[in-house]
Image 1 (cartoon, rainbow, N blue to C red):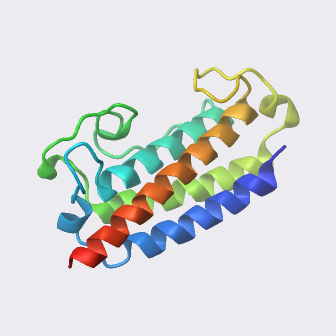
Image 2: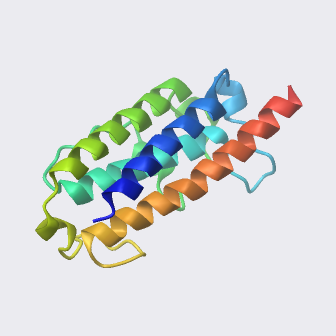
Image 3: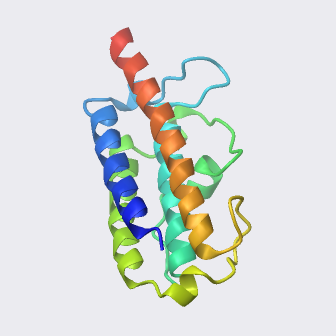
Length: 158
C-alpha cells in the first residue's frame, strides 16, 4: 500500500493550502486570472470535494459531511456561479483539513483486501480502490499547484 506517500501528500498539501490562503479575503478568493480560469475559492472547494471522494472509496458506507451545494459547485466540469452562491473560504478550508484528518485515520484502518478491491466509482487512474486513491492524491497535487499560482497573483495584484 502507498500509505506513506499518501500521508506525506496530505501533510504537504495541507501546508501549501495554509500558506496560499493565509490572509486571502472572500473577494480575493473569487478572483479569476482570466475568464476561463478557476478562482482560488473554486480550487479549494474542488480539493475538498475530491477528499470526500477518497473518504467514500476508503469507507463506502461512511456518511459524508458536505458543504452546501458542494457537488454542483465543485465537481469536475461544474460551471462558474455568482459570488454569493459560494460558501465562505474559511468553511471550505476547514472542510478540506478535516477531511484530510479523516483520510489519514481511514488509511491506518483500511485492509489490504479493501485496498486491492475493485472500486465502485469510475475514476480514471486505475480500477482498484488503492489505485484510485493514489490517482486522486496526484490530482490533488495538480490543483494545489494551481491554487498556489492564483494565490501568488492575488498577492502581486494587491
